[in-house]
Image (cartoon, rainbow over all chains, first blue to last red; front, side, top):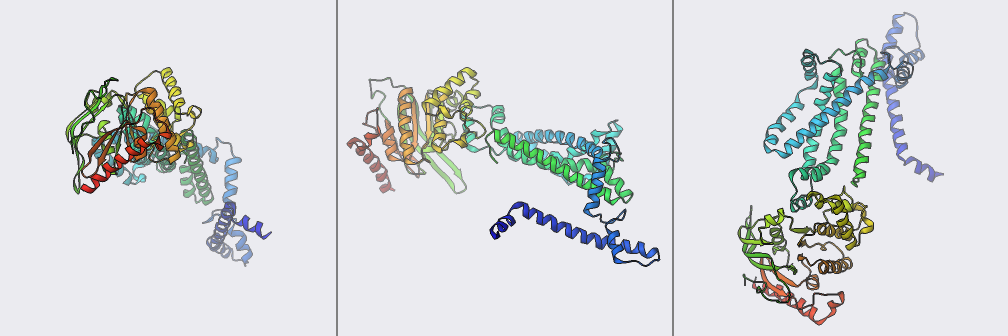
Amino acid sequence: MKQQLKSLTQTQGFAVLTLVLGILVIWYIAALLMNGNQMINMLERTGQSWTYIQVLQGAYSIQRPPLPVPHQVAMELYQSVFNQAVTSRRSLVYHSMITLESTLLGFALGSLLGILIAVGIVHNRTLDASLMPWVIASQTVPILAIAPIVVVVLGSMNLTGVLPKAMISMYLSFFPVVIGMVKGLRSADKLHTELMITYNASAQQMFWKLRWFSAQPYLFASLKIAISAALVGAIVAELPTGAQGGLGARLLSGSYYGQTVQIWAALVISALLGWALITLVGMAERLVLNRRGLRG
Amino acid sequence: MHAVKLQPETSSPTKPHRLMIGIDDLSLVFETNDGPVHALSHINLDIHQGDFVSFIGPSGCGKTTLLRVIADLEQQTSGTIHVGGTSPQDARLNRLYGYVFQAPALFPWRTIASNCALPMEISAQPKSHRQAQIDKYLTMVGLQDFKHKFPWQLSGGMQQRASIARALCLEPELLLMDEPFGALDEITRDHLNMELLKIWKATGKTLVFVTHSIPEAVLLSTHIVVMSPRPGRIIKVIESPLPRDKTLALRDSEAFHALAAEIRQALASDHQID
């Protein structure tokens, strides 16, 4: 019996469960402290006598609490995911799909751009010296400053909708791909490279038969970062564009109206979306690398 | 002691003896931060078609560097070298030789068959021909049943055999091998040595083979080039009196031991001079 208990406590699930429980406990205590004060103020204003039981009940159920508790967020999630038509403005599925669209478009464009820049940098010494500083400088500019400029510029060219948002996703996601691919394309094994030289392989053959494959593990590591950056980009892009839909718009309207529960629900959905996207890239990675015999 | 000719042009009238590799007063100096390193100093060597030539010597004697100069992976500082009647660069561009490295250097994302196909893909040979070559040479090295496996699924010895098959698939006249069995255990090495001899006899290729094992050099070679470090140079070229048809049992013979002793003495004599 002791043995069984011991082996149970050493499982990964047990560790995760303990951690989650710990966080929940801390969350509820913090919510009580933060929301309790507001509750007491409300009760005082009524002029009637109040009890701590009322405070306790109210702290976990008021409409716009400073810190919503998990079960409130879960309820809101359930309501806005399952109890709304997916075409409704109140549906988180609706907003997620809008954000997902620009995330995926931006990710695809950004990855392509990143790969092309990396190929240029690796094959051309001038590009290496001239392009890399700009690539790095591009990431030191705060994205919140860039986003409205992109939207205005593209808007003046009559480009609206998903494209401006995708551009901002692209802007964030090309960078990790450049860095990873440059490293990856230069990572070809010395012996493999010399072998190709003994075969009198052309530069193109060297790329498509050796460097491209050597770079793949690096590429997938970069793509995982890029897709989460693309999601952040899409959400950030929805903030200043006055977008009516998208998780960013949902976050913004939540903060306008003090709908903290709505903000938290949108946050949870963003996190789930990010997790799902990274998992998808991870699955693609395993599929490709396993088939190529590259384990890990 | 520097200039050693392998043999006069007409040493063996019984077989045609086209000159495959001619090296004349070749030197190679690497410039390093600690000053120049004389990797190769005044090398003179002729290697004829059909010969099995071993370079032997302690590490740092330049045996691998010499092989890399033949393969055009390094360029000499002075002197001349001809490979198959042309410069090493032309020989490489014409894919005259196959090179087998110390490590198998198989592409991990390709199967064994696909690895063997690589040089033939690069030289744009038709697919049917590629397939026939792969079958022929994988059978020759005993890996026919493993053609669809990935490199990591094979042992080190099998991987090295696959890399030899890959080199053979292009049917090069000249096979350059840099300590190909150096990382393998002795039993596997014996086995692969005999297989290599079989392939050499079957194909009539010229083989240049780098090793630091005296028994291996004696067992395989028609000619043994003994080299010495600082500066890297040839101290003796020994023509093997052993028959070309060799067996493992030969290793217990008088002639085998005598030849091994001669190599050992050559290596030791140089040591005393240092």
